[in-house]
Image 1: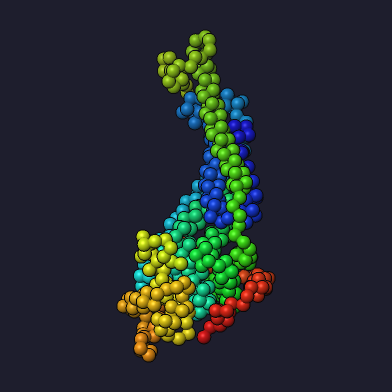
Image 2: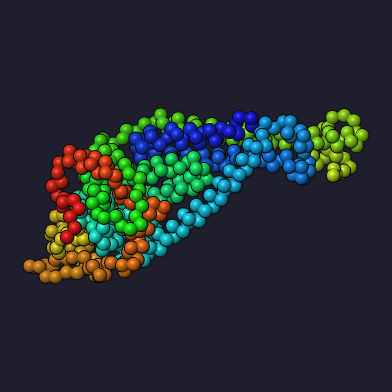
Amino acid sequence: MRISVYIPLVVTVVLAVLVPGPARRLAPRPAAWALACAALVTALGWLGSLALLAFAGFARIPEVAAEGRWSVSALSADDPVYLTVATAAALALAASCVGLGVAAVRQARHLSWARRECRRLSGDTELAVLDDPSPAAFALPGTPGRIVVSRGMLRCLGDSEREALLAHERAHLRGRHHLFQTLWRLTAAVSPLLRPLADTGGYILERWADEEAAAQVGDRRIVARSVGRAALASAAHPPRAGMLAASGGAVPQRVRALLAPPPPRRALPFVGGALLLAVCCTSLANAASDSEDMIESAQRAACATELKAAGVPGEPVRQPGHGHERCCPRGERRH
Amino acid sequence: MHDREGEASGRRARGELESGVLATLWGAEEPLTARQVRDRLPGDLAYTTVLTILSRLYDKGMLVRHRAGRGYAYAPARDEASHTAEQMHALLEHGSDREAVLSRFVSELSQEDEQLLHRLLSDQDPGQDSAPVGKEP
């Protein structure tokens, strides 16, 4: 408990610092899955750690201790968690839960909006063309999802580049990339430290779709040209009101990755990541069982004082079943 | 290229071909005949396949056509395909919103990004089948 409860938090920090750089250079599909696992495990570890820390403080509230029949003084003597730490953890836990709730509502709203929009778009074809001169292209998840491309985008691409664009958006829909996106956004809402992971994830999804498009079109350079051309055309076009300046730098990176040979499959980063996550899980389990032990011994201590007060000599003996139910023979209650 | 996954994905492949045909027609400056569409689509598609897709899209009201020589020349049905202006703006703006659950093909570029891209792309063979960048008729 002394250290293990903090390890999931440390693992989160380590992943947030170490992952974003190298993950961008890995083969995108396994990288996306690994990142999804990492985000999920660390978010749960984060919540678990905070909950244990908060509980350590919560258990020292006299009313709570009376309800659970454990001794506050034994707990405080045993427990290494400072009250300030416990309070901070409780606040962080509350913030995480609120953040998660808000993000979940927001994601659900966006998904249902996309679904509705999919149905509202004219035609029943996979591709819906918007008759608009500004270049835009995106995938709308739904059942089935639609590929939305503006006339302006289609006009600025060559024949094979259009095919690459369609293959890219199709890969988003087929790979259910919106689910990855949702998972990362939710985990980033749980722990702000996971935000770099979510940003990296967004980039990796684009790379994944680029690679799928390259496999489909059969020429990486065509996809590179398609991405580059589309970006330049968007930049040349006067920005639409309300359009956010999204993170720059991603498109040149993608083009460069496509002009290079496909990323090699490497095992080492994944093994390393898996080890870190395993450490996170074990230490959380460890901390949880420590915390349980501590409560149990505090209950025994409470028993001992009660028995002593009742004049029964000797050590309290743990009875089979729930020790604290049986340790006060005549069902005396403390007040 | 599309039918390598066998017949099970026949319907999916047909949907993809529809997309390809639609994209080609929207990307073209003028109406195209079935043969022209076929020439612009990648892979070796049979003429009749393209013709079938064109007539299906026409039946759905997504294309307009007029006589050209012995066959027809097809163009996208513009008022049919367009959202109302208001809906479309909402869609485009929402679609460009980073919070939305959409994956955009490209994001905005910084000045340096733009120069870098120009350099990266000019190292490539100039797109022989490509329209000039940013040209909007």
